[in-house]
Amino acid sequence: MGGLNPATAPWAERAELIALAQRLEARFVGGAVRDSLLGHAVADIDLATPLSPETVIERVRDSGFKPVPTGIAHGTVTAVLPDGPVEVTTLRRDVSTDGRHAVVAFTDDWREDAARRDFTMNALYADPASGELFDYFGGLDDLKAGRVRFIGDPLQRIAEDHLRILRFFRFHARFGQAVDEAGLEACTRRANDLMALSRERIAAELLKLLVAARAVPVIALMVERGIFRAVIPEIDAEGAARLAVLVEREGTAGVAPDAIRRLAALLPPQAAEAVGARLKLSNLDRKRLIAATAGPGDEGPHALAYRVGVAGAVDRLLLAGEPVDAIRDWTPPTLPLTGGALVARGIGKGPEVARLLRQVESRWIAEGFPDAARVGELADAAVAQA
Image (cartoon, rainbow, N blue to C red; front, side, top):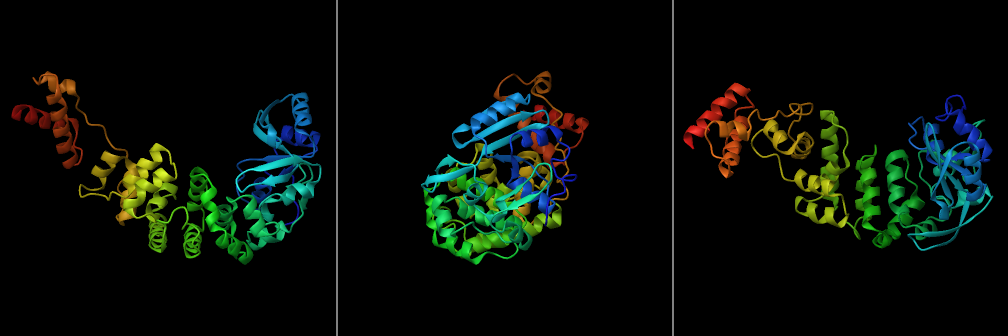
């Protein structure tokens, strides 16, 4: 892992971005550099610059682009380019931290900016034109070894920002090969610090971790080390084992990983509602989490998919160890009968129409979704009986 080839870098075709970066005396930083070196897809490209936010705004505007002061207090300006926005952040150093927030001061020292970042692999910078790499803390060696290593004293870095505990494990699940023992020990010792974090931040990190390549062994390691004990004690060794089984079933069935489904595997069914509320998941995710633990029922996979949707049915079937091939690419049909059709058959408007629709629908599902002609026969029979 030497430099980045400027001809194949993810920003190679973005001439306007490269020109702007040079005008801002900036370097590419963080995930874009790390993922490029690993050959992974790059989602977001960030720039770091020694220039003040005010100067950044002025130069972005002079370059013909719109500057948006998205995080001006922390030195971040978003430059809106034709091929997508780019965040530009002035080099910083921490003045004070409390485990959740940091007070920063601006600097023109690249090493100082690198020193405040969490892991060595995230403190890599690249020249926008030449691809030259700047590595102040051995991040290249750690990236090559698959080692997630804190910059500086791990205990101190976690005290500065408690979320780094979960980030350590998430990055290890994504990039790690050999665990950094000093980092692991620090996360274990400071696991109770997670209680000071908002549950939304905890949920965001956990859900990202659950879909990482090595989620299974990392979750098992976290359970072994008691990382969840203070904030999600419902996650235990049995849950880690259920997760391992689910991930194997997903692979066998060719179903993409899903964070909510995997969280459902981690939790005892009776805990889904409480944990979903505690983590402040969206209403949609909370309902899906609870529904995933309800079991597949005995109507069959198509009936289940019709009633709860294909995604919900896949969740339940995989968690129950039942096959999903029949519904994975299936589109549930629409009942070819309306309330108006029942009224036309002589049923008076009102609750009776809805009751008969449900009755016909249940028969239609039980018979395997027959065609409109058969539904008409079912409707005639229901009306005659009524």
